[in-house]
Amino acid sequence: MDVGTTELMNYSQDFSSFVHEIMEAMQRYVSPVNPAVFPHLATVLLIIGTFFTAWFFVFVVSRKSTKESTLIKELLISLCASIFLGFGIVFLLLTVGIYV
Image (spheres, rainbow, N blue to C red):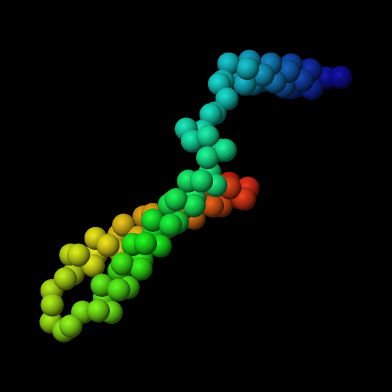
């Protein structure tokens, strides 16, 4: 073997040992939420989100006139519904094994 190949092999072995040392020094990532709770959390969040969605629907449909200024209330109800449904869907996906 020539000198260039020997240097390349030494560099490769040094780099491999360096990466191995770093990997052993790292700590494994632990989820802040226990995966056993994912189905329960998904169910609760989806139920709450569905409640806010139904409330929003009833609120909008049952208005007497279209001249009422209820924009802030509509936005707050829809924001709550979308947040709860969004997190509920994320935990539903995590429950079935689709890790997003």
